[in-house]
Image (cartoon, rainbow, N blue to C red):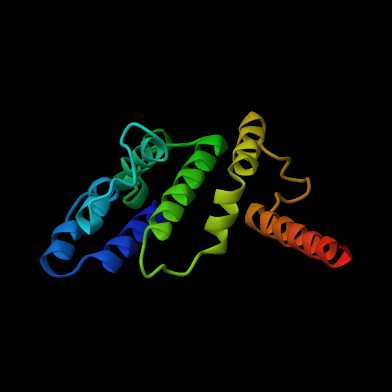
Length: 168
């Protein structure tokens, strides 16, 4: 949720100044995704009825209970999510971030974690599905660092392609 807010705020900082920037900063976060690009250059980057907007809306609606948890019995601690739902949130934020970055001029630096998720969303969603069906054994091997694993695979693939190019 914080990453989603950070990316849309960065997009608005790149594109808006003065009174427009101040007005956009006061918008609810989801409206920043919907209206910010229109304010910036008249384009609609996100459709309210499509992804990643639907999942972002679900995530951003949980802002208050996520950011301001209450001391209460566990039943009323706020929302709980399955690993699959958490993976869906991560993929939606990555897709939104890549869209915002691709439509920014100048383009901000890419975050390799966002690239890894955006390039292999099914890997994250599959892991979320498996973890939802049954969490790993706490005495078993540790869960993988999914981003590091994807970046390693991407690097290995690039190295193989480079080797094939030299062989030709």
